[in-house]
Length: 138
Image 1 (cartoon, rainbow, N blue to C red):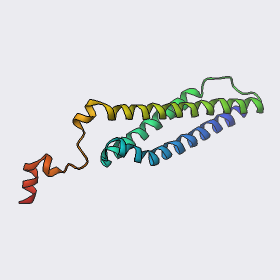
Image 2 (cartoon, one colour):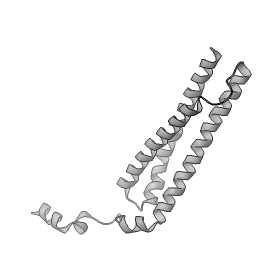
Image 3 (cartoon, rainbow, N blue to C red):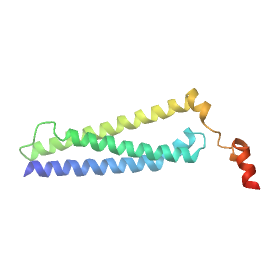
Image 4 (spheres, helix red, strand yellow):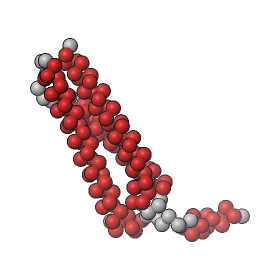
């Protein structure tokens, strides 16, 4: 019974931490992404959502896989140690993923590929697609 309670606490606390961190990064990361993608809000919002989904998938998968590993607790002290080890590992993985994502986004912005294909935020559809703009005006 102790093992089931410990597992339930691990899953519940890990999910709560993952959801809280994901929502916080999603909400507060939007400003960073808009700046990183030179004012392109639609692109930033799209990437922000994709990052959130990937974040949840990787972390929930990791939590599920990590459940199996480690010494099973047989008493209350062991249960606390089990929880602190497992949740600590989840938090470290969340932090590593966050810094990896930040690093990759900064590298993407500096890349020649981004500079070549990213439209400027001041560009309008009239300048990019003149034939389409003329059809709309007639």
